[in-house]
Length: 211
Image 1 (cartoon, helix red, strand yellow):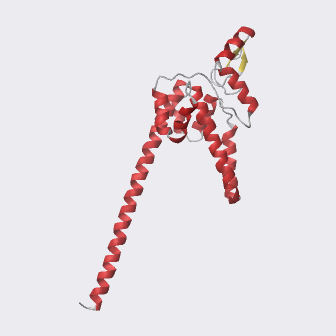
Image 2 (spheres, rainbow, N blue to C red):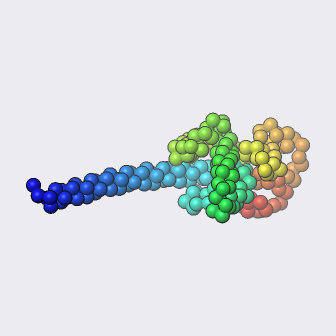
Image 3 (cartoon, rainbow, N blue to C red):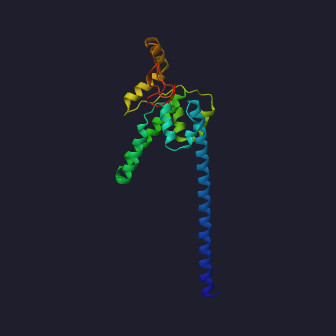
């Protein structure tokens, strides 16, 4: 066999191996994209049902960032957390050394929201672990299941403590009974965010819901 044939076979074999590897990588990426797409669809469907249970429009689940804002309204989590997470993301683009700070902020907000969603629909904090890590499974279970919306019941917030206390007071059954016994007939609460209102208020000044 000539030297030319040997070189040709080496080049051909090397090129074939590269094409085979590229095909495998392409197929793996395609499968991953399909899995991610299915997870996103399941999450949207679950949140859609969840929002409707809480008296919010289901289509809000289709809009990124806005769906998180609606979750904050439903659970009583201060929506300023969305801005904080956004700013933290911008900061690490400017100062990469602070990436750990951004990661901590994102994880804390994710846990805060997951626990608050779980409590607002009568689930324990263990259920929040499923929402945080496997939202595409646990949101549909929560949305299609028998769990009822109890009102905004946020986890203890380390930053917005004042707002958190107000919302928690609204959603604790014992506190509601005490409030009903001690308050006058001229006071009621917004069913969406728990803000205390006078009896003649037609729109909630906090979330804008029509009463």
